[in-house]
Length: 81
Image (cartoon, rainbow, N blue to C red; front, side):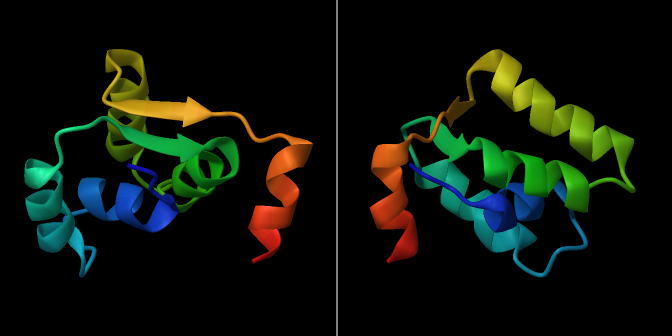
């Protein structure tokens, strides 16, 4: 499942208003989460006040729970939509 920075942050930040909903949704998802480098970078930036949350996000990448895919020029037309 492709996720943007918002759900990544909500999964890790208990103060986020969407935290509970994202945690519950993740329980129902059977495939690894996938994101792109810009969304991952945005999430890391917005979690800058919490080293534990940043560490947890990196841990998801290291364990394979979150996959980061590269974007190419072929993706540009879709990004514009």
